[in-house]
Length: 129
Image 1 (cartoon, rainbow, N blue to C red):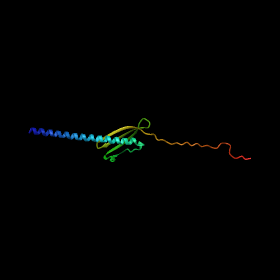
Image 2 (image 1 turned 45 degrees about the vertical axis):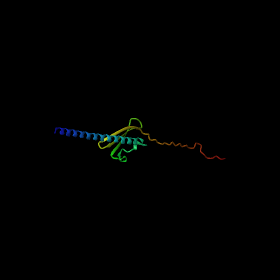
Image 3 (image 1 turned 60 degrees about the vertical axis):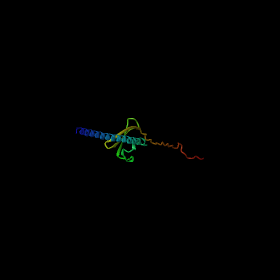
Image 4 (image 1 turned 30 degrees about the vertical axis):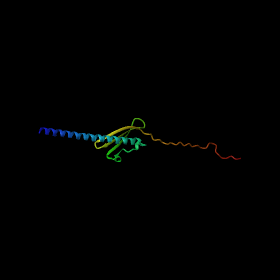
């Protein structure tokens, strides 16, 4: 009877340990997925011709994960034309955040200089004799 009781306690403990391992494994897989999704989104933002016009949030439905979302935060840094980009990927209670500094090409303006010349002094009339 005591042996049966000890075996029951041991089996219960082992089953609890297995469940804990499954939860930890699922969390690790989710964090790995979020890391990859955030990295891909960061690459999208930094390779955009003008990152300042890139969207600020969305989901990963196009990649097959409609329950995962992303957000982009673009902040100016103290260096000229350098901004800090932070991409956050979320799924359920888990989130992963990646930050990178990027150079943003300054907008170029086209200025045209027009030179105007006026006729000289001495009027024009013809002077035939």
